[in-house]
Amino acid sequence: MAKSRYEYVKNFERESILLPETYIVIRVDGRGFHKFSSKYDFEKPNDLCALEVMNSAALKLMETIPNIIMAYGDSDEYSFLLQRRCDLFERREFKLISTFASTITAYYQYYWSQSFPEKPLQPDRLPTFDARTVCYPTKELVKDYFRWRQVDCHINNLYNTTFWSLVKSGLTTQEAENRLIGTLSSDKHEILFKEFGINYNNEPEIYKKGTIFVRELDFESDVNIDLSKRQAQRLQKKLKKSEIKKLHCDIIKDEFWDCRPWLFS
Ligand code: DGT
Ligand code: MG
Ligand code: MG
Ligand code: MG
Ligand code: MG
Image (cartoon, rainbow, N blue to C red):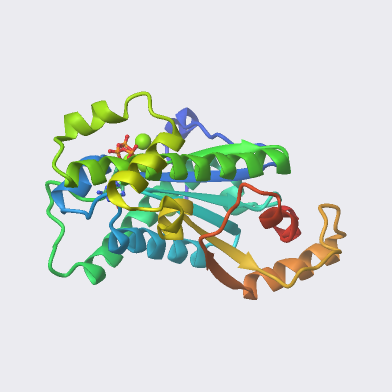
């Protein structure tokens, strides 16, 4: 295209290039899902069908972007881990966040209409998502990031399960809130067990642990972060063809990470 006299306005654009050789995490989160979940009448504390809409949208995003090596989600959020050497959009932050936010929004609306034909989306409250990127320079930080999200899922779910049990038993939401002020995790377990006969440990794993999507390979001890260029290319090919597994397991203990060295290749 020939340059016009107006071309100079492009010099006002800014770019933010994410640090090379770091692990990029992109987290998307539903905007105003507190209100969204009440408008569309989500089951409390967890709406399995709505969670699966989120899961389907995240999986589809992962399938279309091979650089995503794993994803973790619960509630209205999902975190996507990109490979350390990932060069998607030349690591341009704004391009990454706008693409992730709009793509997850599009898929969420698509799967919503498939799963809830009886609850058509209304223009006064459509599901939309924000996105942010964080760069982590080490494996340990990446693990702690995902541990943080899973602990958050656990804390929220224990609280919500107890809170809604109290409300369903006749307390107002204000009374239930007051009842839980200052309670420890052990107190909530006890309320659930003694007052409602619920053993929290037997609650569904998807609620307690969230959902993990991970590109799965056979365990290969020779996967390390100092692969030669050819080894890295071979691994990349394998990963592209690999199956994406859906799990609801613990990612706080080392085991999950220790048996998947390719997450950090
Ligand atoms: P934000 O993210 O700042 O725009 O505001 P929210 O309202 O999205 O807040 P956030 O993301 O911290 O919390 C997620 C909200 O979504 C929270 O109020 C509970 C609701 N939510 C998510 N999943 C479910 C569900 O399965 N059932 C019900 N009843 N509510 C859910
Ligand atoms: Mg939020
Ligand atoms: Mg939200
Ligand atoms: Mg959220
Ligand atoms: Mg364009």
